[in-house]
Length: 80
Ligand SMILES: [Zn+2]
Ligand SMILES: [Zn+2]
Image (cartoon, rainbow, N blue to C red):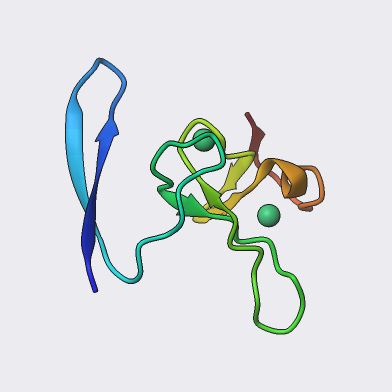
């Protein structure tokens, strides 16, 4: 099932992004979540905490991590 999310890019441009899969839960702050935490939780599971673009703790390549897991991820990355 696909769905669309509206995101605001720097400069105030609004874009509609078509996402595939199940619509994630909203972010804890109430905004539409556009990312899920990719932190491995053991086995093949990941944290999957929904995050909006303002609440992402860390992005490392194509992985995104919630704020509670951002400090636990080894390797390079920009801490927001
Ligand atoms: Zn948020
Ligand atoms: Zn997480």
